[in-house]
Length: 360
Ligand SMILES: NC(=O)c1ccc[n+]([C@@H]2O[C@H](COP(=O)([O-])OP(=O)(O)OC[C@H]3O[C@@H](n4cnc5c(N)ncnc54)[C@H](OP(=O)(O)O)[C@@H]3O)[C@@H](O)[C@H]2O)c1
Image (cartoon, rainbow, N blue to C red; front, side, top):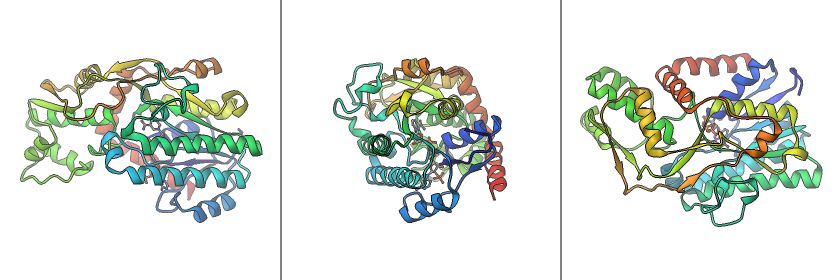
């Protein structure tokens, strides 16, 4: 990949996409193509085909998807399957038709069976039933992995898939209904800290800046937060706190994706490759860590009536380590950076907007 190569980042405004743009630019790549969802809805096959025909990108990172936590996966099952399936089939097929040199498809560790042995090796794909709470998402992701593989086998396309573990970082989704665990923890502890300090103007600003997601009827901000499990003394969190999860800082993932695009192909990667930190942490311990980073002094209550999901999910990252990449940012460092970015979203939006202006 040359610095002048035309690179299409699908999903450039998302958590992964925005980190990828930042990393590509920092490495001197300057011919990056992006489209906002209102300009190009990747679920629309004819629009996607026209886009590839006109733009002729040489390299593609497929990081556009409908993404969310357990609750969103449960509430929007049809969209999680339909959107992710159509985005993947449209982009991969159009990339093949227009002669894209290399495509990296973003999958997820959710594709592995619920009771697969830990740590999860790439070969466990399709070796058992999936976790029911994210089955629609996983099925769409598995179809995309197979599509890349079959375009490689049938036509020699250099299209392969990577399975990142749980990601977090600047640009995360802080909507409490659809967010993943790390941004949900950061936001809940931050709001509880503001309540305990009586900083109601800052509470109001936060609630106006980031959507809450849930349809909650409340007379005051304090009532509203109480219904979401946030008070000045205590934060209520979903589940038992017992499961173990692995977390990767999104800039580490972006480094891995660019490294793979520069140095590797389907021949050495195979149909899928795990990308993770290689270590996991119990959710209750993660909650304590986030609480400390945010500076909330109150209690944590666990609501065990809510689902936990898979008991443990740790990726085996031996293969990507052998290819020459490993994670660098510690969880503590990543959480500090994520909290800072959450409190200053303007800087992030500025980066995305200034990139979009350069592309016009
Ligand atoms: N986040 C994680 O923990 C995680 C973990 C493992 C794997 N992954 C994978 O990494 C990839 C990126 O995830 P992410 O966390 O960056 O998600 P994200 O922050 O939600 O970003 C997804 C991006 O896709 C775009 N998009 C969604 N539907 C679209 C459509 N119909 N047409 C065009 N663009 C569309 C979104 O645009 P709008 O912003 O305009 O909606 C957004 O920019 C996904 O494939 C995901 O499965 C994520």
